[in-house]
Length: 65
Length: 453
Image 1 (tube, rainbow over the protein chains, first blue to last red):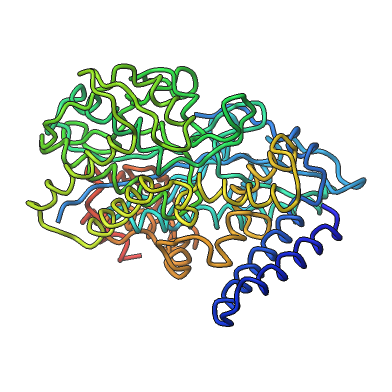
Image 2: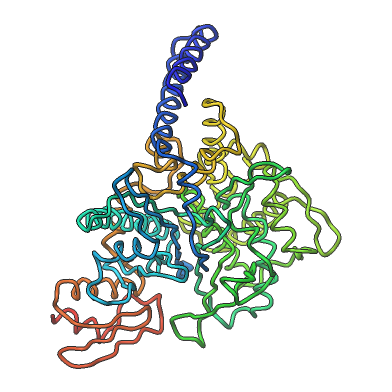
């Protein structure tokens, strides 16, 4: 996933929150959630950094019980 | 209070990815050898008991397998299951260091799941000790089958699939079940497995060995899986279930239920009725509630019932809302979110990789643990309980005794052979201490000997 695209998503998402959440307390909560979500997605990006195709294809086990 | 021995065996998937341009490839077998090197020496077979009473060994198909010590409480069992993940994780870190020293640079990934890329399966087996004379095996099997077929709606670990009928199904294991009852664990696996090695007095006890379930990352899923099954077994032993839940075709039903993430698909009972997995589980739940109303209560059983009811209500409303509790829903949620935000295709390698990395037990590269760290999963334990279980055996079963012995062995104080049901002392003289009751924490004679060392 290209970084610009992530940034684009984030900007878009934050703007949307500002428009629809006039109550600042709720907005804070939503921002926290959005932050958490974005951070987790970034972490998943890191996990998937190496070549996924190759990784998945190499994961072959002998059958167990 | 009602007591039973519970145990979980987990076969892990394992792979070593060499560093780019530097690493040489290692076979699965070699990696497993490195994994064991920290705890076994020389030419010993990779099969050891640990100081917390657990057994760690290389199983069929070269899978590292961790079997928890005997627990008599389901929360304690979940702690020991999680302790196993951490022990194996620690061994992986040491193994990587040793590999580097030998010129192999790479990263070991260990998955607590049940499927590889080409469809080979490996298991997570549950064990329940039962009093043999209370119920015939035939009756036990017939009352358990509909329960095992339907419990996957909260115990499933989820899997990505490529098919016209959708991209995701509930259980990793369901499609590998081919028979109602079978002794096979590697070929035609059954909903009920007939292996019966009690590691105890055979006359008194049977061991129910359950191979139909998925491996779980979620503490909540593991807790419910074993907890509800334990309650069902109590009812069967006490001949409390009078309704007939027998299914027309149980093997077909276990496949179909796995394929339907709405959990609403109707399956046919032998008596002609058609019920969904949710409805059938509600019937078991209501039966359990009636049964427990006349039994002495205990906190763990109360907790199981509370969580079971919560999950049933959630499943009825919308299964996909249980995205903090149930493995198959948590995993699906994060795959779906990632697919959406990164504009990926459901058939992409990234998605199949995510389906694996959810189950990675190494917390720094595990999707499940990334979610857990952010408080996005419902937990049963705190970390202190898990850390304790890495080193200390359960207090109320014979694992306590075994653990104490292993500590002495590890400190070089005694030389002995250990198995589930015995301890064989070699020095200063040969002596066999046999246990016939796993619920007994002490063997008197042997304890006296231990304390004298």
